[in-house]
Amino acid sequence: MQVPAQVEYERAVSVGHALTLLARYGPRAAVLAGGHSLIPMMKLRLAQPETLIDINALSELRYVEVADGELRVGALARHADLLESAVVGERFAILHDAEQVIADPVVRNWGTVGGSLCQSDPSEDLSAAFAALKATLVITGPDGTRTVPARRFHTGPYETVVAPGELLTEIRVPASPGGGSAYAKVCRRAGDWPLAAAGAMLAVDGGTIVEAGIGLTAVGSRHFCASEAEEHLSGAPATPERLAEAGRIAAQHCRPVSDQRGPASYKRHLAGELTVRALRRALLRARAGER
Ligand SMILES: Cc1cc2nc3c(=O)[nH]c(=O)nc-3n(C[C@H](O)[C@H](O)[C@H](O)COP(=O)(O)OP(=O)(O)OC[C@H]3O[C@@H](n4cnc5c(N)ncnc54)[C@H](O)[C@@H]3O)c2cc1C
Image 1 (cartoon, helix red, strand yellow):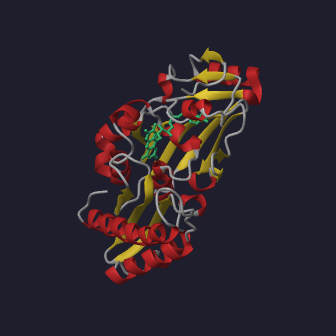
Image 2: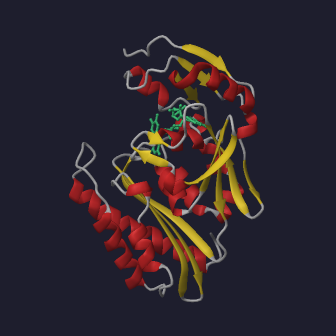
């Protein structure tokens, strides 16, 4: 049985306390949220922090609410909090779609939104969903807070712009008037990581697409988004042909790799097909006044 190396443990009781502890222990400290990714990485010795700063007592970071016209999600909100949120189901359906197919109830009850984004796994689902929604992430450190677009948050596999001593504290999603959104994923077994998945957000005015957001995961897309396909849609007529062409463009520009989940050619095919499915559903929702 694999066990992690010996590690010191501190339990933070507030954001300020967590920042003090992070400053005290330096870059060899790691934030512990749900632990569903960090603890397995420690067991494999892929992560070897000297100190764990447990943030699970920070109830101030556990919320899902709409304020000033935008969705605000605290970094410690659990997957289940997003899934069970009525406002998310009604107005940010892409997040509801995504959460239904992330892992299983055990993981969703304890894994956090912030931990998922900070883990920066190249197959992570919420990173693609928040990229499609053009979310902004709030990072808090010793010098105060700064905001970063979700599309600039990940700097590579398992790497983000969160510096040692900082915490991701909030995710903000702008409400898009006339918008609809959806998420589509293919995995080998229910609750598994995706072979490929796509999220889409469309804002329409009459028959015209006024704004498009497309997120992709597990297929090597830079910053989890398909900007070339988005450009093809913005300001264009919302026709089936246009959506199909956007799918082709998304597939063309991603860079999947072959692995135990499937060959690169199949993943590229899925990227295009799932993009079109998510776009179609987002459009239906936009027209039905759902989101
Ligand atoms: C069996 C299983 C199946 C899964 N299936 C899927 C799936 O299908 N799709 C999917 O997307 N995910 C899946 N996951 C991952 C799951 O979503 C985890 O919850 C997620 O990867 C990490 O969240 P966590 O809260 O457990 O973070 P942790 O493991 O506690 O932390 C992950 C990393 O983020 C850092 N961190 C955490 N919170 C913060 C913060 N607020 N500020 C700064 N750094 C922070 C930690 O230091 C660590 O480096 C699966 C996990 C398991 C165990």
